[in-house]
Length: 619
Ligand SMILES: Nc1ncnc2c1ncn2[C@@H]1O[C@H](COP(=O)(O)OP(=O)(O)OP(=O)(O)O)[C@@H](O)[C@H]1O
Ligand SMILES: [Mg+2]
Image (cartoon, rainbow, N blue to C red; front, side, top):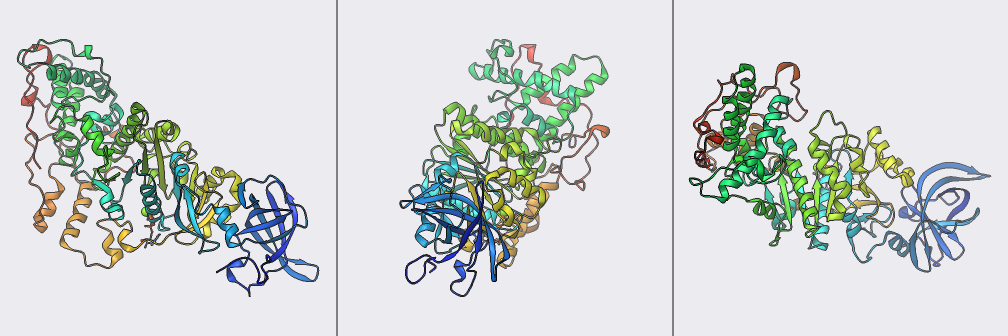
């Protein structure tokens, strides 16, 4: 084992300080022999100690260059000074500067442990030091969580495995905390076993009435350009549908004396139940009063869109049974955020099966509800909201993405701490994330990254340790540089080795890594995911796989009313977001004639009974 000290117990002196400027020291390394011990060879990323009277100033090597010192051959090293060891204790920052000529040596094992805070209370091990693999590398769990963190690195360097290690340690150390993980590739379920509930579009119930106005619009318009007139109509009728629901929930419907639903005072964003049928009744009734044909078209198109999403099996998670049980907000919240935990303090939200055009709206709803629950409960249940592929949901480029999800994540980043809602971000494209969000992350785990824009962003985020980032492009797999609140000092470490059964692997993609023979179920699941991302509607993808493979999937009853095809954006205004369905999606059927289905017969102010609740579609 490396000790950094020679046989007589004295420190091996490698050189002397020759320059000092700010928090940097230049060292002439006169002993650069490699013979003794490979570990003690001074190279970038390693710590050296400057003997400065009774104390030891600690610096990390950021540059080494070959030099000649008189006749002797040697090297110069630049150190970033980060702290000092005084009377057996490590302290960050430099209180007393070393002087020119002070001797410089390797750190002993004990000193390294002191500097890195290994074994300190409240720390948890996530790997080993790159400088000395016998020394554990730890993070300060509370600081890590409560000041938000981000894990950044190019594809395939080990981010998903790294975050698994971090989250497993968090779960082990903080039983009071709930962890909510957005899992875009459905890869994390094996990593957390029975500690996590796994939600996906088949078992998630996220009633549409929990979506705020922006999110609702995103769903209804499928991420395409919105039509202002239709938006106006919705803005008017949604609060009315909410008010109406409240009225007939509180009264015997046949006896009901109608009051103005406006009096309920709901806004478009109030998260209270309403029925989609009521919404359509209200729209239909307004359409009926219009003389002008072109105005009627606006209403009928809107009805068509509502009908389309309502009947699209891919949207079953938000429309099926959405009104069953009345106001189920408490149940939804307690399921999503594990209240109580019942042994599973974590939720893994698998995103891969959601229709691509609503993925961002769903993330927006979830992040917003996590924040709002923290806000209104005054942080009763601390929660860590972890978002993989964060650049998709909080893009820097506001024109290309769906703003509400970025806004919801930014809100957690900026104000979440006050309400016990914390953020963990993972991305391979740090330069593409909204910079205001990443700047709130006080611990950064930086893995290999070669893109100059990404590196520039990290440099600006860790201004005081900028020099240490020079070797980020050359970090190996599993290697990571940790900066900020969660670590005692900037730490170059190697994540622990995760056994294969705990590694994240997607349900469909895992087979290729493990060399397994793909089973029929697995191929069925591949087809399901493929089709749900690209099909328009009408038939649940599960049944297609069922046809082919006789899979055991729940039965499906076709929609009762055929809606018009997917909403079409008018030619000039149409745009597709990068995550929208690929261009090869089946062509939409021609728009149906203005829709006046049976549920739309009763106008709101006719004083008659409300339409009977529509029986839920079965799966
Ligand atoms: N800590 C680890 N323990 C064991 N194997 C690891 C570890 N980290 C990475 N690996 C190996 O490296 C591969 C890639 O790791 P991982 O999937 O975590 O990378 P990633 O950065 O998340 O990639 P992507 O950007 O594609 O999501 C894994 O399949 C695994 O074999
Ligand atoms: Mg990954």
